[in-house]
Image: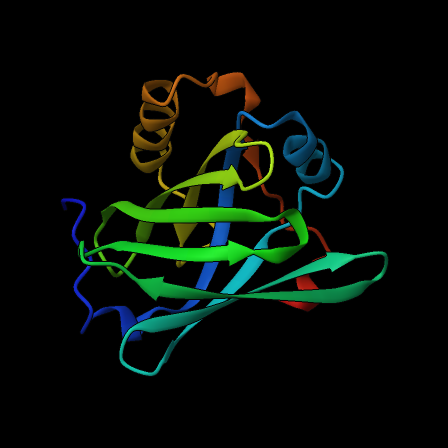
Amino acid sequence: MGPLCSRRRISTWTGWYEAAVVSDCPHYMRGKKGNPAIVALDLKRFGQASLTVTATAPRHGSCQQTSNQYASTDTAGSFFYHLARLGADVGVSVVHTDYDEYATMLLLSTERTSQNTTTIVKLYTRSLDVRPALLHDFKTLVQKQGMREDDIIFHEKTASNSTCL
């Protein structure tokens, strides 16, 4: 499927997992490498023009939730949010999706004060078992964004982190 994500279909996005992630930001990657657990996602429509995206992951023995409010843009499949704790504006694009099994996401953030930019590529899936062809396509997208396949963090399901799923 192409990069379009229709506004009417996005309301069906519940029960997703962040299965893999990579970024050109060393600080972001250190945090992810320190906690490579599967991240559960819940996306809910909020009003006519935005989504609330809640991520749940194990951290320090409990389940930690973070939420961001994604505002729709004029481009289908593209969203925007502000990350206050970092003073960063984040553009989010659905690069590919079949709506039922997977979505590849591209996040481009810019810190307001320094104008530093960060690229993040994520693979969202409905299943904890990811098909090899899907992983291959994700790795190709990562390389097209100028990042190395070896830097990808594949989230792991373990007995200790499955309670957050």
